[in-house]
Length: 294
Image (cartoon, rainbow, N blue to C red; front, side, top):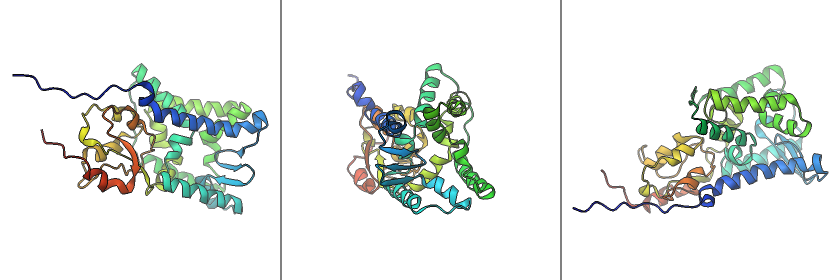
């Protein structure tokens, strides 16, 4: 009796398995370069920080989370700040709020590096807090801002501190970035971005109904290699779309915790995942044959 033929996916090269990661790094470092071009080289394309900036002297952009803290602290924002916040809200509401985390935030590079090192050194995952914790931190920062009249999170925000550290070499700024790195390395694997940071929690809420989504459109071809789970910063978002565990759940990942980082698309040799839209839910599912029961 002949053995069954195993159908294996063709092995893909380095660029194919890291395309979206490379594009993300180009985006993150490119945005940092725009902010640093003025202070370092005298080319003022963007003035300010990711919290509040002015591009080419005409386009204001404001972090809506910072603006919200300012409002509850009793401050009256300028018209330009309100306009900038509305622009940012509109963009992330369309493409997915946590796109900020994976494509813009420079701290993502720090936490990804920490995760890579922890995997290489086989360091235990450590404390894994509930995913709701970052929403509690978000609420507490708003309460603290209202009570103190100060934009509390900006005092300790490692994103802002990283900008200051790169411009002024401030020791405290680099200490904060190092603390995030060590926290993810030794205390809680992927703990900062996934469980603590209120910025990610805020943008997750902003993009809850965003159009851009990752879809497991080819989920019938899944061979359970688990590579997508290994690289995903929030692996719990994959199961409902990949396995259809929720009744009537199509292949589109709808969880606000998904950051559209594209790593699942990169590493899957079966080409199960792709970027799609939230409205492709039924169409993608109907185009795939049902997996036969074992």
